[in-house]
Length: 166
Length: 166
Image (cartoon, helix red, strand yellow):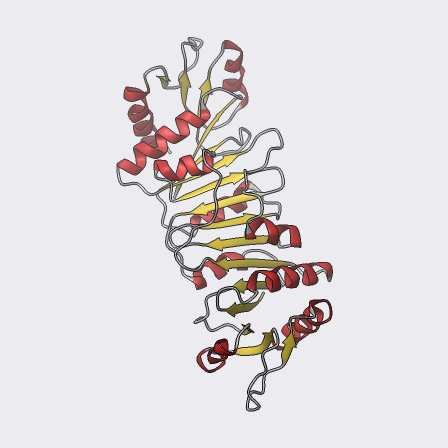
């Protein structure tokens, strides 16, 4: 299972790019997993009053609900990215797309919405491509650049880049 | 990690007994995991429009959201009970309480709400105790019986039985 990150500051378009990439790869018969890191101390949205929530309130460290087609596991145990990735490895996935975790070491797409976001290109490791909305990269940058104003053309091109370089 | 099931027909009190047991064990410093099998083809309740749901719709096989304290994994891959239990084994849990999966082979508490539920005692394997609400068991039955009308006394007694016999 390959791992590729999609990172960028808030409102840089990560959610859109993640969903488009998942859709593209799935339509091309790749088995894709996804993981989103909630920034700013948020928590996953849960439905109030469900058994899952009640079990957590009662003290369950991991509360699971198995439905007919969907299984949901809610974990109140602290988990590092690498531990989470190990869990995904149990499944026959081709690719795990990770949104966020800027400082992690996996190959990553950096989204650059504004000129001020360009500093990310100096700070982050293992960048394989950059997605921009009308921001010109410095001439010294050698990353492949995909214009996210044209998602229809450039999501497939970005996906090809991920398949080639991850 | 020990595994104990809580089984019974619909409306036999499984949800109540599960929550009380989780609360009791957690208050006694055991690390407890829980897993509920949704009967009748239901699915876990999800919040509409979340990233997790959007990723699944886009084709993600496993969609995870990592918050500050809570991580939620939603899996659209079919999973057998034993595969799920293997996932719980990755965590430092003392006990996994499983609601449902009557036909599974793990040590189990059977809840008997009505006389007609007594047939379960013939049909199921690995029964270690019975919880009843005013139903008298046949004299031939040798299982320890806990009256669930008195949860305050009998949940701790049932918990002791689980710790001893699982």
